[in-house]
Length: 284
Figure 1 (spheres, helix red, strand yellow):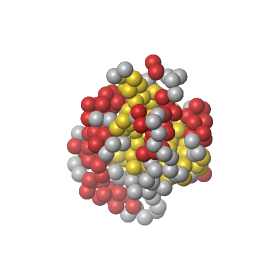
Figure 2: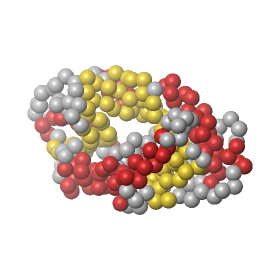
Figure 3: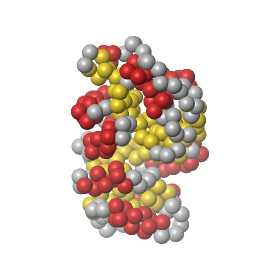
Figure 4: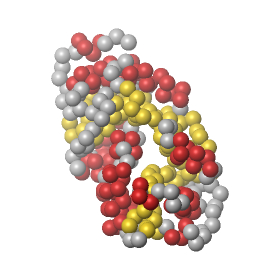
């Protein structure tokens, strides 16, 4: 595709997003371009209100593409709302030129046939695939509470903060999408953080989100010093018990994590044709 944007001399400046209504306005404006609509941004009012409150969510129009940027201390999560692949191609070229000193991370999410036409646009603009995930699904069949999984407890507020620290310590925040502490506290209040203790120390945890019909796995970790003790399977089975009241479970798994993939098959999941390609301009 031609690099028409290289001839544009206007300077674009990021602006801070001050409200959820502003996000809705930007979405409406992007859709009104009329040629189509491609995006990797999906509004979550609670989570995005936290980002807005922290002043970390900004936007910028580049030609007909609206980019949203969530700034963290180590990288920027980047989102696009664009009329077409050609518009995305032109605007990514400018994004790469302007912000090449920052680590930008875009998630390209969809069926394989959808991702396969978007990913080349990123690659030809200097981005590369840092990692990828595949989605698994399990249609629920209820499991019983037994003595073993009864040892797993829902996290208290103090334990929620301890688990949040472990997330940052042991997980790749560029891949795992670690929530802000305010969002994580809400998960804890809902009882969606499960902890397993050994000798007054957190040996492992499992957290998740849930709506009326679907439970979504988020993070599952056994502390390195406690691995090999069957703790991971106890946590997973307790999670399945907690999901008894929903129809299905969805779980994103890193494609290179063979152990996690085999565990999902073991617990009755099947792989879907849904992928998340993590594209970046600057590998950490």
